[in-house]
Image: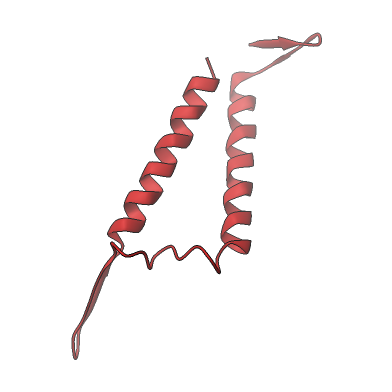
Length: 81
């Protein structure tokens, strides 16, 4: 537990606060950054369109989201020590 200025912080509370801040930041980024962030339409995404068939697999978007989440979880683990 962290002890700063005479009080302690529960690790679960600290993790929930950090997770909440990350979600708020992601929500704001999605809301206001939607015009310049083309998630779901990146160059590595696979789209096949035929006459009666449409297939879409967001490969590059999935990799980008995975990398960002991995970085966030790694930072949370490092900062929690």
